[in-house]
Amino acid sequence: MGESIFDRSINRRNTLIKNRNILQTTYIPDQLPHREKEINNIVEIITPSLNKDKPSNILVIGKTGTGKTAVLNYIGKELLKADPEKKNCSFIYVNCEIVDNPYGILYNISNQIITDHNSKIPFTGWSLDRVYETILFYIDKENKVFIIVLDEIDRILQKNGDDIFYFLTTMNEILKESKISIIGVTNNTKFTELLTPRIKSRLGEEKVVFPPYNPEQLQDILRKRAEFAFEPGVLADDVIPYCAAISAQISGDARRALDFLKVSAEIAERNGDSIITEAHVNSARSKIELDAVVEVIKTLPAQSKIVLMSIIKNHESKSTVVITGDVYSVYKEICSALNCVVLKEKRVADLISELDMLGIVHARVKSFGRNGRTREIELNINKDIIDFVVKDELFEPLLKHKPIKQTTLSM
DNA sequence: TGTCCACTGGAAGGGAGGGCTT
DNA sequence: AAGCCCTCCCTTCCAGTGGACA
Figure 1 (cartoon, rainbow, N blue to C red):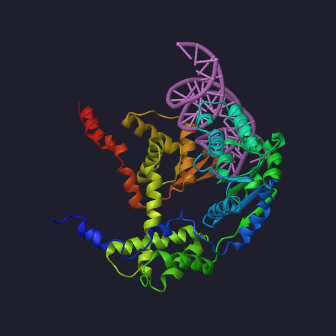
Figure 2: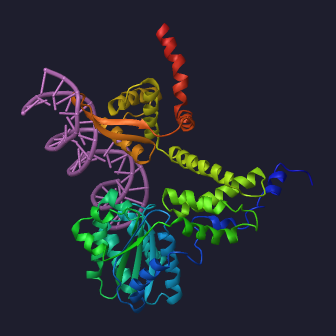
């Protein structure tokens, strides 16, 4: 057998991590430490469903990484244990971050209710009314309670208003045999304020708040996972406390803490180190931050990239503050150089707002008196990432264009 | 004190693109 | 094939506005 270029790499692999899966943020452990109270709370509210009685609707509120999704998935599993044949209740989970339009949500719900392949709802094409009627029919046919979890529920609200919630919460008035109960999950503490009154009272019959984890709790969580995930003795003593401390500082986010641990281990493995130390955590920290931004920028639509590029160019060429109008004029130039569609001012202004929301730029409204009221736009990414944007293949024609311009000028 | 700038922010609507229905 | 429907991206329209300046 000849030597392969993979040999060295394969020998080095998996020496520290025993079970990679456990460190994944999607992994649901058998126990969820420090969420007992919240679990009990929810369980108590939804227990009536096992007797076909309709539980109250619940709003679950808590920041990212406080275990909301994990708890709900866990409860879903347990509910199935209590009613294995789904005679009295069914648990339905929809992530509204992935499908954020009314049709998509109803489609998703229907997929989990309608088992008969021939009666499934198509993923597009029907009127919402028809989808709604069909779902209603199949729900009622089952004669049981449906618990519908809408994760990241604020996503829908942003784009579509709360009509869909009205649909869902009024279903019970039409249903004869079955009942549905909604569990809305959000990390926006002000979520209820954004709802119209008719929905507010219905959706928030009960509220369960998930507080952020404190450093000790985070340590606990990490230790439980580390025990199964790592080979014994590969973690330096201070690694877990350190991971816990920095994530507690940020927001008590267990997901992030876990990520620190996982990426630290991966970095150590790649370096061929036999022990994971605080230094690895530090590299992990910056790697995670960098990767997140790069990922966001990579997946930006072309027009957004051009707008971002316009902002970058403005900052390169101007020492004064950059405002919406400046960005737009550079934007127009770049578009014509790239030979692509030129959007109108309003749209570009909106794209700037989107970049702001993604945290790539800071754009705050400011009045310049006689010079009007507009946004003052600052970049919120470092030099390396700016380079990354500029080198995007989308902007290659920009480099080629220059010589051509020069020749036309000299003629 | 009022004016006026350069937009903002919200609403409404068009039209392309997906796909179902008859 | 013609007629629907929903979503996405975009344009058009417009009232509203914070603060420098006259």
